[in-house]
Length: 201
Image 1 (cartoon, rainbow, N blue to C red):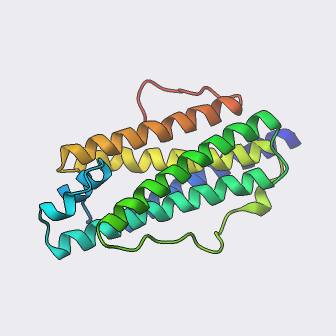
Image 2: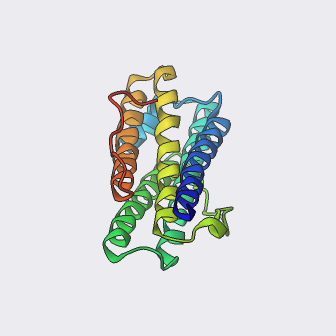
């Protein structure tokens, strides 16, 4: 009975984390869209700034990029909490470190784009409000991480249809795919079906 209660708490943690992650993404990016300049910068075109965009477009692009950087910093910090918890088996810790590395690479790429646009990339916060008091075993940590990844998948799945720029939609789809792979791996590690349905909801 105790095990079932613990599993229920872990599942609730996953659902709650996913919901909060998606809500935060929507609130921070509501009404914003990337201009072609930002899409070009993310695609590696360093001359994009000179190709012409007004200051309002550039400021908006910097704001969106910094929102994404903030989310990536949060993911890096979340995986650090898991790594330092002492609750992860060596093989699981290795995977968590790899996923954390992906998020660090995202921070570096996004920060470079911000600097190329003449902006200043946002720094990581000193602390985050993670539910550390509810992380008592490896399953709890994995449910927490899976919730963050699922929230990101849900946010991008909802955002892609409203993008006007096809390049940005493609880039968002690529990010969604990466987050979905993380989510599937974490579900597998939890002993859950990594791809539970033919359609995502």
